[in-house]
Image (cartoon, helix red, strand yellow):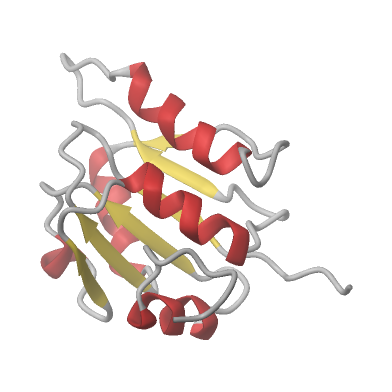
Length: 144
């Protein structure tokens, strides 16, 4: 156990976050997302974990990209509706640590899948919210 690191961040996830470079992306997926299909490089299982809790553990350790959209979510397919509580809960966790974080950019389902295929890693969580996937783009850690 390390001090100052939320215990929801497993040693495997901590290693992946440390290995990621500027511009690399990580998918925090809902339980329905085909992570093993679309993220063939690094897939971690986070069954039972909820994305807002995971965001609360990751964001203090993870600099969001300031040069490109750092938060990406899937747009609703035509005929579907988004549940605004999902994004609201994610942003509450993120803004707890990064108050000025921008709202997520929404992209289409297949564009999201294409982006996930290029992601550095994917954490498949226990979140069951429809359209509950979010991509985080890593930025440059500021010089202290």
